[in-house]
Amino acid sequence: ATQRTLSIIKPDAVAKNAIGDIIARFEKAGLQVVAAKMLKLDDDKAGGFYAEHKERPFFKDLVGFMTSGPVVVQVLEGQDAIAKNRELMGATNPKEAAPGTIRADFAETIDANAVHGSDSPESAEREIAYFFGADEICSR
Ligand code: CMP
Image 1 (cartoon, rainbow, N blue to C red):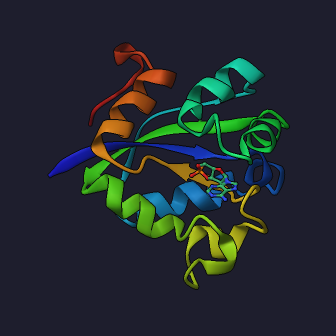
Image 2: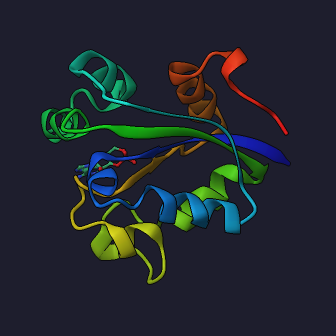
C-alpha cells in the first residue's frame, strides 16, 4: 500500500554535504519527497522526538548529537515507504549495515548514523505530525 514515513538526515550527514546524495537514493528507489525542511533541533524538540528512549543509557548522547547541527526532516511517500526506507538505510549500527546502504556508505558510528526512519505505521504517523502540519505536506 502507499505509505508515508518520516526521514531525518542527521547532523553528521548534513556536515558531510551528503543531503543530495541521500535524497537521490530515496528518489531512485521510487519514494517521493512530499515535505521537507531543514532545522536545528533544541533539547526539548529532540528529546520529545526520542521520548521512547528516555530511559536508555544512550539517550543523553543521542539528544546531544541530534542538537549538534542542522538536520533535514522529510516526509517520504510511496509503495511500502516504511520498509523501503529502512532497507535503504541499513542496520542502525553502520558496522552491521549491508553494503550499499546509506548507513554503510555515509555513517561511522551507531550515534552518528546519518539517517533516521520511522519503524512502523504508528511511529510514522506520530513522527510526521511531530514535525509537519497537514498543510505542509504536498501529496503528489
Ligand atoms: P534512530 O533510528 O534515530 O533511533 C534512535 C537512535 O539512537 C538510533 O538511530 C541510534 O543513532 C541511537 N543509538 C545509540 N545507541 C543505540 C543503541 N544501543 N541501540 C539503538 N540505538 C542507539
